[in-house]
Image (cartoon, rainbow, N blue to C red):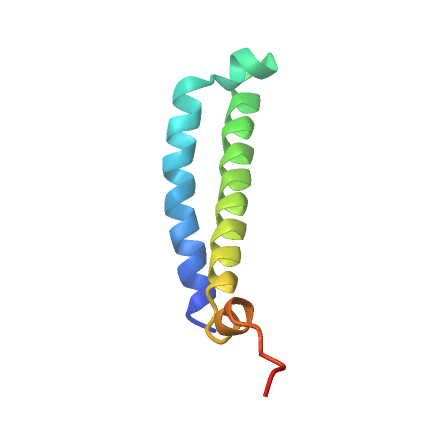
Length: 83
């Protein structure tokens, strides 16, 4: 379990980089939010990146939890009561 969390965070970090590049290539925070200074624009990029990183980390964590061994068999084949 100690190696799983850093792996999820690293993969979600890389996914957030790609997602931020795509998202901000189409949407300029200056036009969407009517920002006044360059500092506000940088803050919008930073907050957007951390939001995307959090979203990707939650998605990766949920995907890991859904693929834990032992749970799949009990969900796929309920025990039969006939004998």
